[in-house]
Image 1 (cartoon, rainbow, N blue to C red):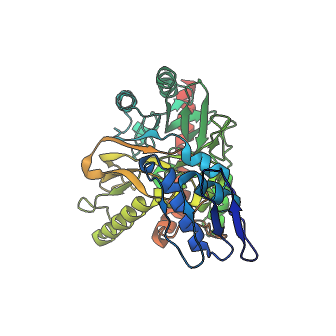
Image 2 (tube, helix red, strand yellow; image 1 turned 30 degrees about the vertical axis):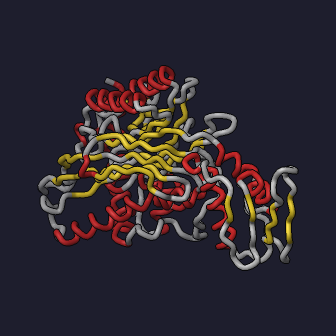
Length: 444
């Protein structure tokens, strides 16, 4: 959507739409940006399917701005004056679409059970009329520090998981996507796979794993960038290089039809401004998949104060709740965000330390392009599907992207330290242990 035109001086625009229609008169030059935004929102309100019975009426006036209107003449005048573009009118008039975010508990390493559960949830969502369905991150394997389970919970990117998604998509005419650990050559990536009804498959690899545990079992789709970020932060990293997958769509922009582009953001990609930059004003819908969780403070973590665990859990909860809406405002498109739920034990990773209990945070959401939550499912409600009707289409992003910032504001200094240091340790484990293990398993 093009930005509204800026008038250098007050002007009056008169548009004669039809003989039987009133004339639209808009003095737009004297409007401040906030008034212009208000008018744009009023227009979108009129276009919404739920308010099509507005009929004729008088718009509230502000200073010299007057608009005597019915729906058609007001829209025509708005286009002529530059407040609204024809593309925005087209977007507003488009039909609404039912979409779904699957919130499921994933059992660590149990690929058969997880794939069966995912298929059941997909069929349920299809039965409720969903046309776009998003599964959570690691829906096939779960994610935990259980090396003996995680190292065997890997599939080819065109393996059984993708085949199931593709089959269901073709049969139902529905778009279906989610992430799993996918092997490519000597390496493993966290790949979001989107199956389309016409049989085409799109895929995007998560740019960087999130912390020690994830880094231990797969490589980032942009490992070279991650190593550079470590060096900038003063953290060392193994010099060994990891080449990205050749079919990876790094931008995360999938041109699913001639007129519709879909964006993908995997978990913490949502809280990095680089993600918003690659999707901003380029996509009509964002599909986001996460395995966002916290460590249970009551069970505890060895050598970590309980109060710190409680504080981190509170900060993470706030961050999770606000992330989809912020991303929508930065990008200018609705967001479907699916997250995991449930609990599972994890090894500590340090010899002799007791296990920890991780909990999926749930709070799967669907938000509109302005960041308004249309539907959500708190973790207290457990597994289930979040449904909402949305208008698929891009609009002018409401929030600006800071030029020099990497993380969104609620990513704390403690989290930054953990991301860099834990990422470096986990990457070393991947290169020295996980990658050789897979190579041996392939040769047997």
